[in-house]
Image (tube, rainbow, N blue to C red; front, side):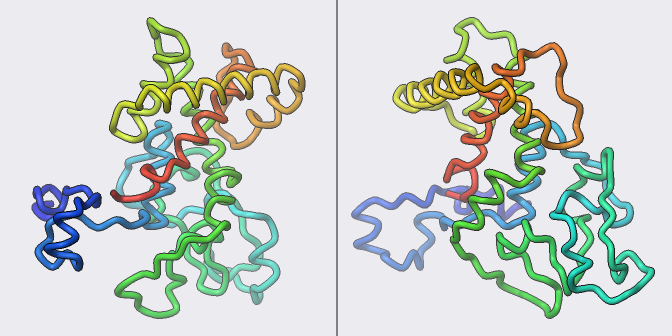
Length: 248
């Protein structure tokens, strides 16, 4: 705690030309490192900002969302949670426990975690690999856990009382996720995307229903489906910002 709360650790990774000239290798720790958050942090962050994260400590492993049939393809017959052939998804609050509690099957690691370089526990890993691949964007844009988190976060945004309509909601949502207020051009670009998504879902309400149907958390019934789906897309955008997924 003392390390992560220190002024040295909390420095930004942005370096001035003078800093780069004097200490290009950052041996003197004049700036912070820049790296993508670990797999568990990325998932837990999405759950936390949406209000879904269950903070309870302790308990058995849980089985959150994952594609059907993976275990059956590679598993031998077994009866324990780690060796059985069929993955049985949990429900309720077990879907929203911290990633620390996600069950680990060494022959079939959780695909979303694996995409973000979580080790499969076949050997001790002191320093994780840090890769950057299109699969990671596919996870944060399409995985049910992230899509559901965006939907729930969107409902939170829409239920907030604001004085300036869309712009106020955009500013509040942006700051809640990134811990900084957005710039004027950023608000304008997001507002333009919001208008485009509204128009798209108004033309095809069934697409809005499909967006809102992802995940088991109950949909807020008193919200307009078109509006809710459009804001879900905005929430997805915010959850995928580089500064949200990266320690800067």
